[in-house]
Image (tube, rainbow, N blue to C red; front, side, top):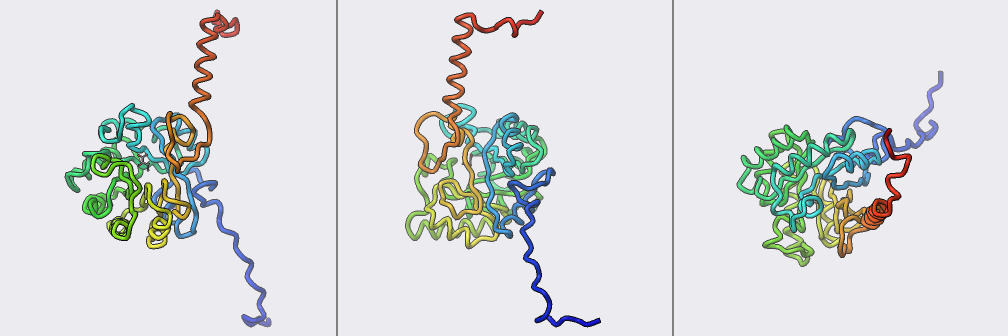
Length: 293
Ligand code: KIV
């Protein structure tokens, strides 16, 4: 039998990327884990994340293939009627997170640790995160801050709780920071880079970058082995997140520039409510087919 030399052997067929593993559009039905998120960064795959605060909405996004859902403390503004995220409690997060977990079967569910539930230190953070993991069944938690939350992130990760870190505009600090673009200027940019590296070193599996200049977000994304999840942080982040009520046009009022609206649910729901009211007032509803005999 003759053996072909390397130079004579036919070129190996180029292997198509394994699309069955894709976070979005993949074929798997088991729940996505943080290991899948790490693998997606290694493949250079981009992925979407949406917030969710209730079982039914979460089930729609799960069926649509959204691989990661965040039970954000934006629930404060978007679901619970507060003005900011600051008043949201751990009890509220536990109820909302459990509902989102029940409504989904594939997405990785990440829950925010609300303001006041981890700032005292690592032990308080562990107690709070443990509740969300045990009672609500979430697969990971998110907390705000890089260097300032280093000890909390380390203890949670060492204890087996995956952590997503949140940098840039951190809404729980609205009373000191306001709602402004973060990381502008050399010193602020260096601090953001330090925060991102410190979150990675502490064991975080991903970093949200909120309202950060696109060039800086791109630099952070290149510098980390873990994925960045952008919101108002440009196109070069590994993933993108939007608040679902903004993305679907349910939130009223002026939207930030970084929001793209994919539907006008506020209009659809308002029109449907008016049509129902007019049918009731005018006697068109219920019609004969809606009656039970
Ligand atoms: O609470 C939230 O919805 C968030 C996103 C904006 C990332 O933290």
